[in-house]
Length: 285
Image 1: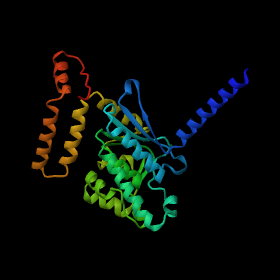
Image 2: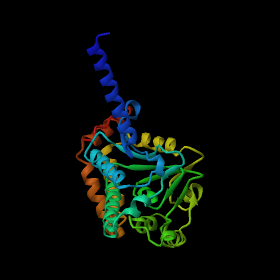
Image 3: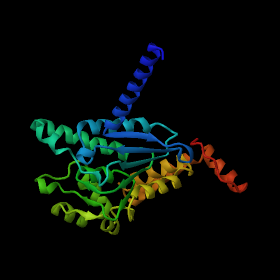
Image 4: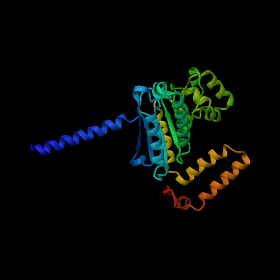
């Protein structure tokens, strides 16, 4: 074999291996699904050595992924999942936190809080697939998602009081809105971990599964994808914004959102498809 050709092949193999290593070492990877799952994006957490503990690099990757899909009209649903067996996310990286200067800690927590708010404010629905441990900041991240699915034996909790701190990335607020103030107080005061089954019973998660929660999350995502994307996004706005105001003001929010779907091409396509007795083909226009 020609020496130059051999060298070129080896360099290509090295480059490919290096790219693979970089992807595998990223704590969070964004993956766009294709084929029948076109329109679904996965945020895949992958820090096996720390059970997906949230480091500064992890947070950077999360924010980059959020920014990448935020204005992408081809993305209709986001699913947040773990590639690490036995762990969804165990919260902040305490080893990294321990090495932080005291003055750096509130800056990191502010960044954590802002990142989860950015996740919550994505225009697309976001589904959390919880398997294994979802603790502290890990649960706070899941609470920033629109829909949560957990396996029966998941371990879920805001355990911060065990470390003499409180949830600082939205947990005190979002958990309260999910399960009510009394239950939220009990779970936060005690730092108790509950199973996915109990989380489902108290309304903390939408569904619990015997094993792999991702299959159920993907099933829900596949149900959402063919719906009118403009309508889905505006429905999210109406529900989220309406929940923060009185009923009368919430109805005004709903009216404003409804007005925005009236002039869309998708609405006309829906009517036409109904008349022709065929599935609609929505373009997000």
